[in-house]
Image 1 (spheres, rainbow, N blue to C red):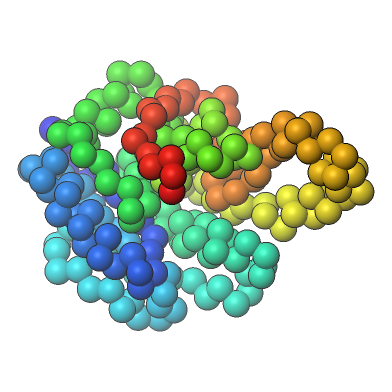
Image 2: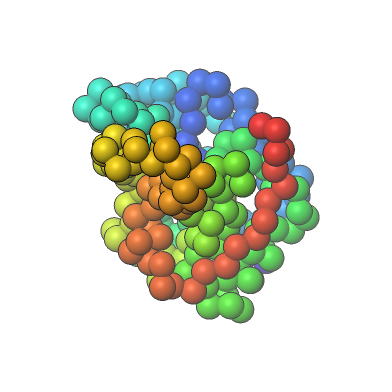
Length: 223
């Protein structure tokens, strides 16, 4: 079993995610009874005082960040990333798990097993890749749906989840990209594979050489 205060599970949500976030705690307890962890939630719908209340001593809910100063293009990604940057610096445990509110782990004992896997394989990162439909996102590094980090190998101060949505859209508008889109759509699509630098891509750029492992999630291909 994991030692107390060894893992912090952090998640970011807005109003529509409140129900998912509460269910996360229920599901974790059902799958991992007795496991020790902290649960850190960023209520990104709140700016000063969180609206979400979780009556559990393991949980802490903090207010999110103001989206107004963030770029309009891709604001959702920037807003989510800014909240993750806020949360990761509040983690005091060795391991941090970035978990989307609506990604549920249904494997019994997964907390202890994942941490044991990290130790045995000497991993810095472990998690799931992007949904296959998002072919423009990277496939060889965990995404922020489920991303387990050993902060002893990738210190929180060096982690940055900021995307590059604005820069990527500017590249898409360049004359060559527009010409390819019109005259060579297949080539255009092929060149775009793994080009979208969304939330978390800086981790891949900064720590791409670190020991990393992936596990394929169960996804709804029609979603």
